[in-house]
Length: 296
Ligand SMILES: [Zn+2]
Image (tube, rainbow, N blue to C red):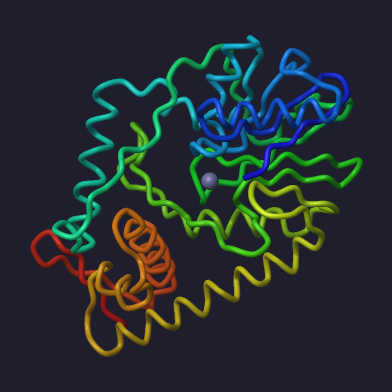
């Protein structure tokens, strides 16, 4: 995965890499190539709350006590009390049962950041001074609920985390609803809105969380929409034969998924079913604890 350093006042690290000494060593080696050390860093901006992007924050803060900028959605995860933790667990248990995968699948505990200090929450429309430039904060949820894109309007640089990777479509992860929400978010629909929202912006150079720096974000967004459409059609074909559970569809489309990655398949299928439901092409009926989707 990629982290970026913006050299200039204030020297800014975008994302931290995974937890652990090996990752920190790699970061220090990268900084040294540019004549920098950890103590030159003035702040960290986290594109989203996935372990590979923000898991190294605690290790870095042990060396330098610098502020962390993150979207305000991360607050839930950063202050996760016992009740929220238990609610999260029971949400995932019932989601997996609803998919018809309760006997098949063992879920991994979600990443829980611990002792972050000096956290500054940002939201859509904020700006952050970084590397001698101004970065606009765009809220782009879907891949996670905390995704932000950092856009330098002057240069056209866009730091996109995982919501706009060039060669793969990052999973739109199903996550529990917030305290004040009844229903879960529909992450694929959110992701599509985020892609739409940034389509017309004058992005020039895209700095992704994984893979190489690239140009031409509209081409990538067009490709993502085409993929969503194609996947919806494939699912719809199955539904036209007879009703299916989320797990059955996942197994039909992604038979190679095993162990913990099964969750990625369930999440991906559920996202597309949300989309088909929104387009009034699929409907759901509960059979016991399991949701069965059919074509309409
Ligand atoms: Zn991610």
